[in-house]
Length: 277
Ligand code: 1BO
Image (cartoon, rainbow, N blue to C red; front, side, top):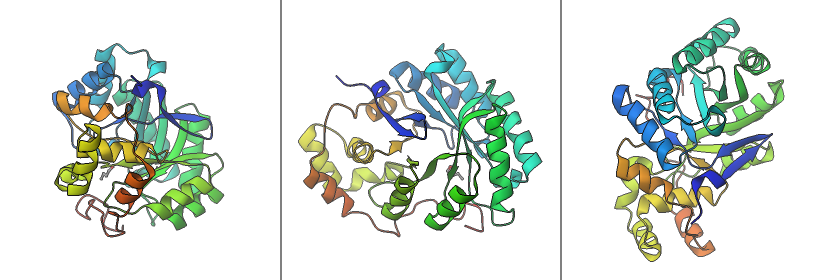
């Protein structure tokens, strides 16, 4: 059987494991246990963020798994209130202290912030990379226009844009912009926060492969060369989410799923996103 460890999305020298664990809204023991269990199940990519307030828990989970540091890909993100250059570097160092790591694999700007010049923030992000605080840098929740602006302004390659992406949200323009710049797309909320299971189409396609609607969503993303970071703290769900490398969706099935997407299918609300988004 094919395993998650063998699948990567590559961009500017970064090898991002195609299936990772998202940790948004996980905290304390639930978070550290989910991280530890995920790694034991074969996950090699863990995603956290300063604003999730769980970097300590994520670090503890990684240590408890006893995985070798070079076997695991760790992403964290700088929140928008720390985009002034000195503050960004200070904040990135603070994340490393909380994670108890000497560097992360990927450091992202979590959300665009129109109140701080992007060039300055990107300069500091590139400096974080030059200082060895992170191996790679990227952005999150960037629109096509902002991706183009960021790529021209950044002194170092941006390896990814992490955005909400699932069958009900059409992200083809963002995906095309990332591809045009050699950037990977990393999908958060990839199973639409559990909404996948109420889709008759996803359920039917899954049944044809002996898989769930959620597994179909993940497979659909991976077949687009997108990395997916589903969140779960339940062992059986963690195990199911990684069993997506032993089947293949046909072109007809892929297209049927693409047809479910709408530009209005976003689930991340202004209650969770910064007010200026
Ligand atoms: C506010 C957090 C959104 C996903 O990272």
